[in-house]
Image 1 (tube, rainbow, N blue to C red):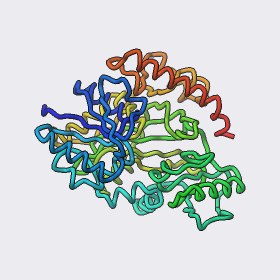
Image 2 (cartoon, rainbow, N blue to C red):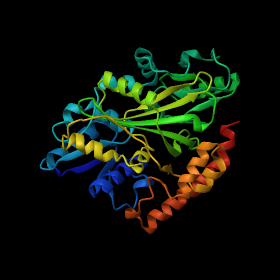
Image 3 (cartoon, one colour):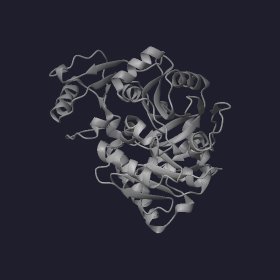
Image 4 (tube, one colour):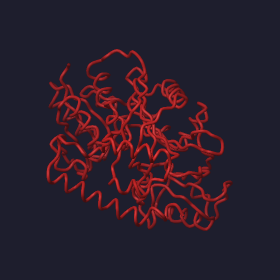
Length: 404
């Protein structure tokens, strides 16, 4: 096997998941570079984080990485983005970074169309992908929003990157709006905060978290889909800052979803990791797409946990140039869980899926991203304990409110 040095962009739980996948498969310690140091990668023996001031600034980002690449030209550098911002920067500066690193990046114009939700739904329309009923809103839609759906409705930003940089009281990653008065009030606050892009208003698909599905795929540098793995989320984070982030996922398998998404990725000449969120609509029996993340999902370690190591597909493609043979459609037998078991017991809705999840727990077939025995020390155990305590308080405070 060819030697390589893993370079990961970011410092969040997604970064830790990729570093763990690399360490499990290749016994290598990763380097991570980011604008800050987040809890999931602290005190780790498998990833070292270097903080780069203002690293998300375009000029600083590209100059820093070019300098790094030039200084270490003798090494085989594998570059992996683990957030929307870093994925976008890799796409934008593909040509500048290509001489120094091995990495995936799609065409920048395609990146912008897929990342921006209004144009993503236009692409869904073009390729026959099903998505919820959608209306685009702007500041000009104020003061009284004319909307065609019954309440509740979903409201979310079209520009997720811009959204991270604005602040106002009551801000959420996405809103479940229950009345016309609430809709008008929230929209006023959003545009008063300085947000410039569109907002997406959608028909709310009924059902709890267990109607969600998440698909992770790896597409090689020749736009051939090497692996697809479908997950069935049972519970999401209820806190305002992280609402919608999955915390418990069991494996799923659906040939119709696989075929539809595989065809789509190949037709648009996609490369790299892709992560799709969708929800089953019991009104018409269809799975409807919410978004595509142009990277592996933050919960994507559930794929590695179930035996399909994400780092392996990346290295085989970009480092070893292993020829494509066939698409692997993953089947799994493990529960991915990033919360205390008692939260899962109390808050996952009673169903056959919950029984299956606890059968995995009872048989020991479960795990999380952070619980890596080879990276276990007292400081990381304290971090995990602190995280669990925060989850318990968050569910007590927010869970029922989000479902009212």
